Length: 606
Image (cartoon, rainbow, N blue to C red):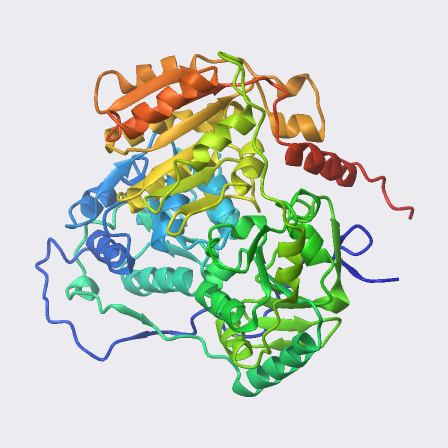
């Protein structure tokens, strides 16, 4: 029987046993000695941490919620020039904001208080871990004198053991630093931050509430800038892998290549395009890699997502006699309930540090970008798959023309959204039907795109929109958020207004958790309807620039878009789009049925 990728009969767990160094080898320092000598007021632990954040790119913002254990630390962080605190309404949104910031800047940070704040932000940090995002999660911890005393502290679960929070973070961060004395604080902080950058994963730093403001000799000089020496591929292994892959692909008749989400952490997007240019292969992306590959590339054929792929993409990918996947994640969602029609013996799977060709062999200690660039030099040009795509391709149709004042349909909405996109915009898609509708958008050069597919936490987009917009103020973020998801994290629209952001939020009001309805319906998927524009108006409260409107038909939508791009272009624009509860994309209907089937499989007989 054929071995299939992402199929019900073979669904193996992802192999994390990398067997070699992380993304950037060891942390080293530059040879130059810093000359700036700080006075005692600036030679503190808190200021050292602030200077490190500025150095790594968290130059203008960190997201925080104050609590008594982190107040002194916050004082010293905000005293650093160039580091501006953005207070969030809750810790979950602060974590999501750091996630969104990291997607644009490459690293983000949030600051919360001990346990009550830490456990609240934990869900967001888990999401960042799943998406390979370096987020520095900083927690104001207990007074250093209380460790080992058997005392019971507030903000804990009532036990004299302060490690509950730490143990929770151990599974969703790649390094944990508990700073409860000054002697090793410098080393712990630097190790934590450099590890986040090398591993492209979140880290946890807990700092005793009485330590942030104390001067110490280790902080008296300007910290030496990080210099993370790049991880190197094993030269012999790289040559062997390139040779084997070139032989595999060059003998194929109609090979294709598909980009996956791990290309981000591997910094391999440019190398992937170089291979596409050299090979002539048809080029697709997995849904969670949308935005990582230029869609104006002449060989781009769309999103490969099994049965819910963009038009004509799956037919070309699944009929290929060889496919190269760069940085894929084959989970139940990306495989549409394990229903992909892929065969392992036809596949080259390129992960950030290893390559597997067919059913074997596997080559370890190889950087993805090195492999793709090496392979590009060995490929024979073969555009057969792309020519086949051109033969069968039929341009997209248009939604049925709406009658005057006819209730707005979702497909009409996104027809108009397409015209809003440019190099000066970025799209944020919330978990739900926006996943599928936004996948069909054609991104112009320079247009950003983000969504959280692996973790899929509803409500993520509100905080992520805040963080992403703050990281790239030159772009106007356009967010698509379902009503159910918005109810989870709505508060930080307040922070967007306070920070003067120009985001356009399309609130899709269809009366419930539509993505859950299509997987398994029940009365629990119906939510209380809110006056969403009224809520945002109340949050606005006349302070800052904010404009809201409700849209029920195409005529009102056109007027709203003109206003948002015209007289309200410098305001946060909140557009509530009221649609029928059963108005969903055809892709969600198909995907929901297949995921439901996968979820409802009976137990295997023992």
